[in-house]
Length: 536
Image (cartoon, rainbow, N blue to C red):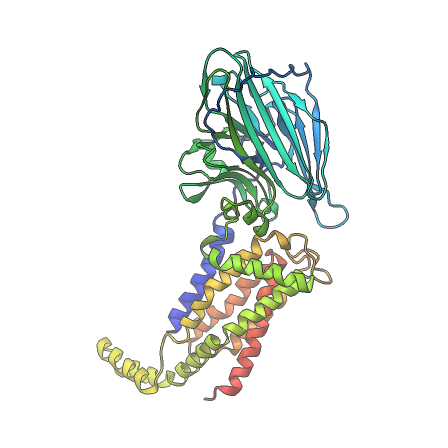
């Protein structure tokens, strides 16, 4: 049984290592994502797109808008949540800045920049429809000037251009002062004499650079697409070998790092394909393809998308619909992690400190699992009491394994001891631990959230390693207090666990270390209590 206990513990450690060290994160790309890809800044803007059937021709002929100016100009949209700069070159996004999030904690932090590009062929949300005669970097005219939106006020930018075939192409962006969501409608008006047909391509390009150093914002980095009822993620390095294409039941396509993302969300099946590629080592391209549209002379067709550039906040993502919250990878234990995140935010409303909220959750979980812990501890104590008799049986039947097994089972039955009683209760708790682990590791709420004293960022490591060292000491005390019938070699192996865990947790987010430290302290208190109630 003790060997099984060791195996269970070592397996749990192995899984923990696998999550954080064995599978290294994809190499991050810069924040300046744009034109043809689906990088962190580009995919977010496409919001409601639906390939609509051509509408009936209007009574009056389609009015062809005035031709755009010969030089491009910028239009700025400023809201409570972000500042965005669009260009009449391609009617596309060239800069996007989040106002409520900083790159570093403290007064020196600068606003998070998701898109920042000067090259027109790298702008986000370029529209390409070569079959309709539309060039991605064509100059557009624009209806409206800079927008300043606050609270729930709304505003629209409408870009338009006319192709040599007489096709009027319009891009309408609708913004809200209190939302990260942007609605995009691409409209095709056929003012020519011949029918036109083809798919609309929404292009995004992101620069990709090598990011050194573990953890931080780029611990997770790369494209994800919800297709065929599952989220598919691609590593940037793999795209250098071969492009990837999705074409089944696409709900959204995103590019995300650990805390921020951009995504293009389909509306009524407006995304037929998503194509991901790496034309070079310094860039990644994402091509969002609509279903084919066919427009007769004098008729109109439209495709709509929903765009999201913003934080990977579970509540905000849920509000976007289309299962966008699944962009946050909580792993196998998402069903546990998501409620814990919700509860963590609930506690924060009353405590005003995420560190305190973590401690409260730890105490609640410990109380819920106290009966299992008590049962496990009692079982180990019972096994410890019959260990001398087990050793006698092993010596007596050392040459007859079958007889020894029967004798041992009879001994268990006589003393009403379950050899798995000490393991199973702990195994039941492992999913909860990993669920909380993932919840704390990938919660943007902990980013730059202070605790007390020297811990000013619960998503960063303890700068002085105080809490990991105390955690290691409490784990050692816990090991010494746990009843054991191990042989000396096994006992030494178990005593190495505190050392291993201490080194593992040195660079872990301090929020996770606080959880583990408080859990150890509560376990020691439990064992002290159980020692008084469970007698030999």
